[in-house]
Length: 153
Image (tube, rainbow, N blue to C red):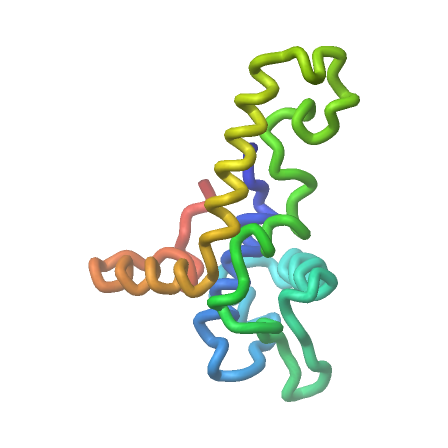
């Protein structure tokens, strides 16, 4: 499994919203600037996240975006599912009919176990958890995540 730029940048945008959750709405331009993202690309990510019910928006001069619920209630899994096509590491775990060895292949079970372990970790990790990690990084001199200086590895 490889997380695409959609997943990584969407997560970073959500972190920016989480960091500002108690401050109200943020304009898309503010999020884009904080994360050093193209506004057009960010808007497509925000559209997907809004359709998934993770953010809400308000139009107008005082409009913007905010999380639909607390950062403690939104997991990485919640964010990545609407942005990524799949979290499977191989196609045969996504659709068993795609493989003529479905049900008789020992490696297929291993791939499923890996997928399930990754999914479990993504479900357990919330935006609040990531904000806590960010605070620690900021204290030791890092500036990853909410400021937009994360490398795009």
